Image (cartoon, rainbow, N blue to C red; front, side):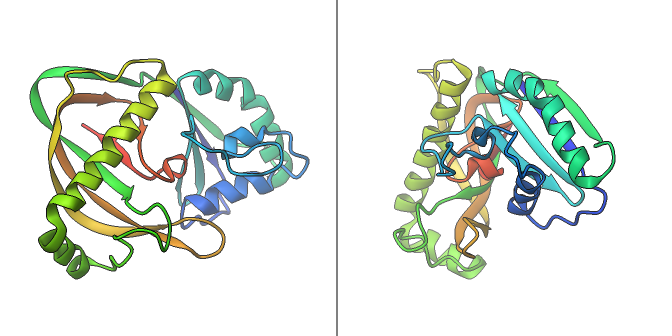
Length: 230
């Protein structure tokens, strides 16, 4: 199960997920919203481990999704979110509510799955993939360290899928197959307010897993990175 709120802000011009996330936080100066929405504790420190809340954005909207138990939490918080946004913008907040299933199934045959903006660095300086700055660097890396690089990518994908399974209260299928990873694009996402960016990749893999609903894996998944679809 997932619940998704699309919180409209007609005067906004969000450039990335951080813009949208920070805007919602700024709408709540009295901290009526629980910090766990922003993957933080009561002291404002970033929490460890996976988050059941994920942010995304469009040019004029904050997109906030809760999966598993967080789906019900988001529904309960809807009046509070509407109040703090309405007070901030000076008019009644326009919020769309979407919901649906979030599930993982094993299919009889391998199928093509896509992943996008998968963060492959654990930090700005402590990763062998820190030097990726475009297609030339990406293709050079794939040619020189293809097996190591793809093994690293597969581990991030599998570990992230298992982490979301834990949030949803389901077991990772023992007969799951995931392979034939093809990387097609590189990029970067902002890691924090200090203008630190982490390298990302997008591409495809073949698997007998079918992903239903929103799935995000890897670092910064709570900011919409590492989306998987099938």
